Image (cartoon, rainbow, N blue to C red; front, side, top):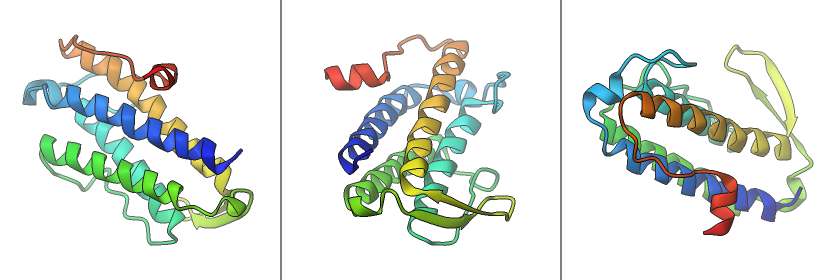
Length: 162
C-alpha cells in the first residue's frame, strides 16, 4: 500500500460523496426522514452515520478527542450535506499531507466503547474509505425506496473512468 493509493481513495471518497450529496439536495423532507428498514432507519440517519465515522477517524488520525455526533447532531438536511462535504475534504487533505513512511506504523486510540485499540494507518485508511462506500451503497437502495430514481453510479470503476 502506498500513499498514492490512499490519496486516490480519498479523491474517490470525495467524488462519490459529492454525487450522493447532489441526490440528497433534491430530496424533500419526507424523503429525507422516511422510515426504511436498514442499518439506520432513515436516509438522514445513514448520512449522519457516515459523517460521524469519517469525522471520528479523522479525529483519531489527528490524535484529537473523538466527538461522535451520530446521536447529537440536529442540523438541517442542508447542514448535513455541508458537514459531509467539509469532513470528506478534510479527510482527503489529511491523507494528502500524510507522511508515507508512517503507513506501516500503528496508532493507539480508544474505540467508542472505551477499549484501547492499536491499528496500522494503512488498515485504518482502507477501513475508513470502505466503510463510507458500504453505507453509500445502502443509501442508493434507501433513496430509491423514497421514490427518487435519478441515481447514477458512485462505483470505483466509474471514478477511474471519469
